[in-house]
Length: 162
Image (tube, rainbow, N blue to C red; front, side, top):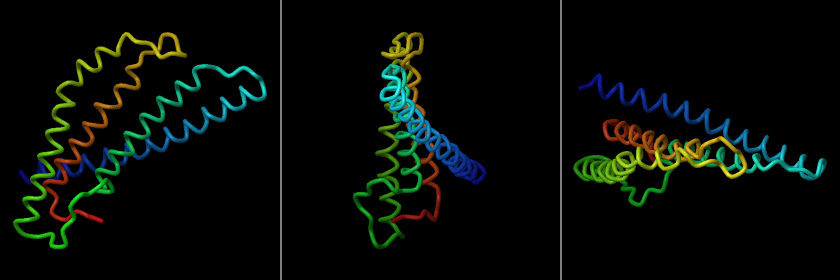
């Protein structure tokens, strides 16, 4: 059991690092695409339609990956943060938080295959032949990261909290 818990915590940390790099790259990509669109619009008077769509795609991925990082670091909104972080109240608080996040992530992951299959044949507005699934797949990936981070947080004994 201890090996499994250590593996889940290790996996959570590594996935956070990967999400951090991907989120940073997405934000840099947004910047590059916006600069390209500005140059194309104001210098060449011919902005390509695909730059806006790529910007939206990168914003979705960057935002959702950033949200999973905030969840892992417990920088998300915390409604109840007791002063005493030990004993039965802390165990109950962890179990309630774990259960609430598990219910949410479980439902989204359960319905993800049908959600993705509906967007498989839909093209981006400005990009012919590129499926919307590149954007919609961000949601199940984000939820899977939250699920893994939630498992790791349940079993960690010492979690940095604000």
